[in-house]
Structures are given as C-alpha cells and as structure tokens.
Length: 166
Image 1 (tube, rainbow, N blue to C red):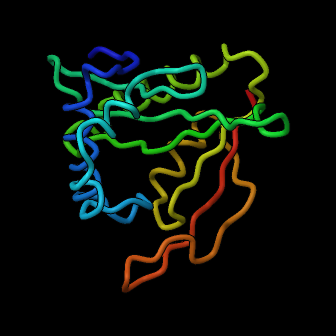
Image 2: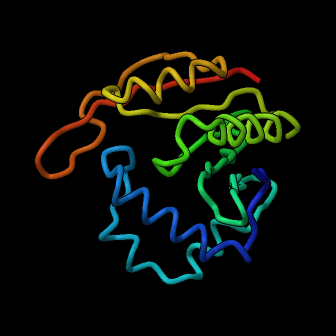
C-alpha cells in the first residue's frame, strides 16, 4: 500500500473513485453521481492539485487508487484555525484492510503541520455507525447533530458533527 498526497496527474483516478463512491454509497455524500458525472476533468484536476489550504490523500494498492479523503482549510481571519475532512471514501473490497485508517492518519498528520490549524471537523450520516466509530478511533468527538442535513428526494438523513483538536 502506498499513501500519498494526490496531484493533477491523479485526476482521472480521483474522478473514477469519486464517481464510484457516489454510486455505491450515495447517502454518504451531499453531492450526487448525476451531477458530478457531468463535470469536466478540469474540475477534478483543480480538486487534486494541492495548495496551502487543500489537499487530497490517496491510498493505492498496486498503483490503483482505492481510498481517499480531502482536507480543506477554512479561510478568513476568524476561520483559518479550522479545517474540514471531506469526501472520504474507500472501495468496499478494501474496507477493514487498514488503508482507510492510514489515509486518515496521513491526512491528520499533514494537517497538524499547518501553522495555526487547531481543529479538524467532519460530518457523518448519523445512521452510519461504522463510520462514526472509525472517526472516533482517531479522537474525533461529536458536538451535535444536524437534523435533515441531507435529502435524497425520498428520505431525510441527519448528520453528526464531529471535531478533532490538533
């Protein structure tokens, strides 16, 4: 397994894994497959190009991207002490192998090196007990629940709000 920060050269693989996640686990994301399938490759290139305020960590097996998570630092004087872990996804066949744990560990360690960063937040669908336990294993703590955070046209989903002090 290789864990590293993605770049523009990884945009095709990132797009493929992102679209897979939106198809296989649509309730875990605010975005939809129907919307993102229409995005040009340039959109995914922008997301994978690391900057001072954002980066994507990927987990690879034999050069195949199988897991990823994005970090986005908030901007503005009163918000720059916070960042968000978003768009976490691991293919089903690699769940439980440790790759997701290594991806999140790498993301948190890299984020900790950012000057002035104090908190990483994330949201997880309340029904996703496994994901919530996964994040809690890193020390994330729940500080609230947003009722009806997501709506798929049929059902509402609450989201738990988690944070980690770094």
